[in-house]
Image 1: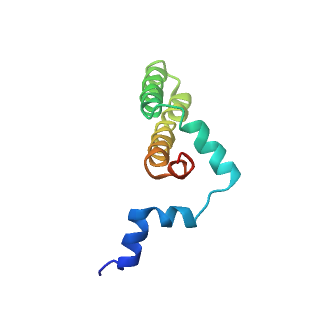
Image 2: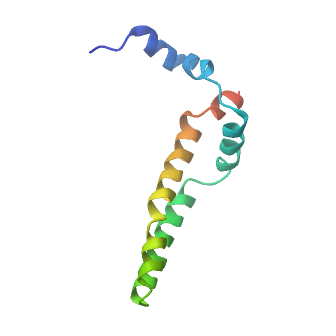
Length: 95
């Protein structure tokens, strides 16, 4: 199925992003997270896996599982951070 030309034109000119404005909470979150380097979240995920492994080896199984589950949210935060920097509403407010 072909993409309508108007949709492609909107994306290339930024009109689509301008037609959907973010709320004040989203803008403030994006402003704060944009200050962090994207690899911060990657290192947080790796750190949670290392701490989880150390807890597992020290026979603290429940704590190990709890901390080990932090890796996925950290990686998702990193993806969100990267998307905000590349295609988020901050590209409109920086102009």
